Amino acid sequence: MTDVNKLKTELTEIVAAANDLITLESARVQALGKKGKITALMKTLGGMDPEERKTTGAALNMLKDEIAELIATQERALKKQDLEQRLATETIDVSLPIRPESKGKIHPISHTMEELTAIFSSMGFSVAEGPDIEDDWHNFTALNFPPGHPAREMHDTFYLPDDPEEQGEAAKKLLRTHTSTVQIRAMQDKGAPIKIIVMGRTYRSDYDITHTPMFHQCEGLYIDKNVNMGHLKGCLMDFVRAYFEVDNLPVQFRPSFFPFTEPSAEMDIGCSRKDGGLKIGAGEDWLEILGCGMVHPNVIKNCGLDPDEYQGFAFGMGIERIAMLKYGIPDLRTFFESDVRWLDHYGFDPLDRPNRATGS
Ligand code: PHE
Image (tube, rainbow, N blue to C red; front, side, top):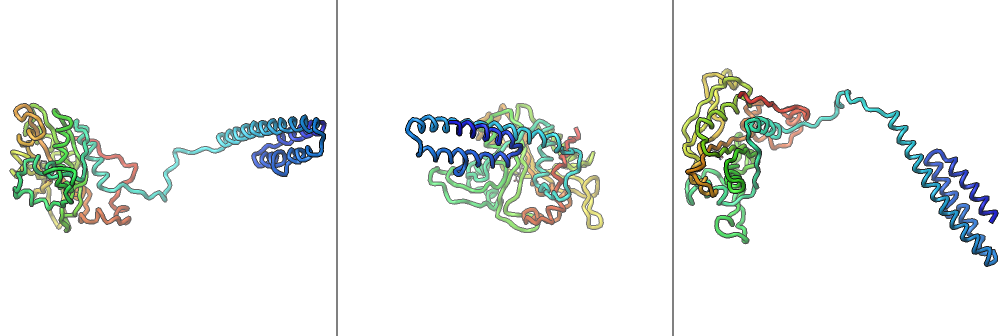
């Protein structure tokens, strides 16, 4: 028994003297390890008479628990002390400039989407979404493209295999050719009044300097009881002036055709094309920027709303196109080549904040 008491004093001192985690670990090995002091004493139990073996064995087991507890307490204390020391000595100077090697840039599409969100949300639009894989009904029929109508051919649609689980037009799957599909989904889901923009990928089978098979559109939809063409003009005029950052940017609306709007128009902004350059603002020339119109009564009806009660406007534009015009990017295809030199040149600093002015 005296051996156990002596060992207890010895081990307690060793543990208490360990003033860092490495020394504490070696104290643990010394005391509790396979070749440690307690194990060594355990091995002598076999040579004792039964009574002594019983009491010494129990005492040794208790000692083992006590020492393990002591080590755990010491470990907690050392870790706490370590943390306090680090907190006291390690500091971060938050005013230091960011490291020059951080080269990440925001893609012009993402940046432009943030600008569009900032401008339209300040006019009261919220952001809605819909799926890239659509069906014939949402992409065409509900938008007042009658079956077999030639306007369907204008879209160079990518069709997917029919969905065997659906019937009729819902089974005819395709990659959406425009974000106007979300006009339908949003009106069906949320009813009216509704004031949304939709930004996302759209797909058409086309490829040259101004067309890529995948591109992005921004769609707007505003439906209420008294929305008229004047609201459409005011909203889009404010938008282009805020986006291009040109006060009094001239605009004109030309009559056009879309099956889902009546009347339909295309909006142009003023520009000048001197010496091979393009400058947006007052000038001798016009540049087409987007399609728009008053939502066709059939579309409103197809979404379960009453066109005698509700009316409104919609518009749609190519996000790459407006980004190319604002940032002087000459070739649409380069947006999707993932060339880091291009991104380094045309990309945006992650800390840049999009322009929030609305001109109104
Ligand atoms: N969806 C049309 C297109 O892709 C654009 C548009 C949207 C026109 C909304 C009018 C109203 O060309």
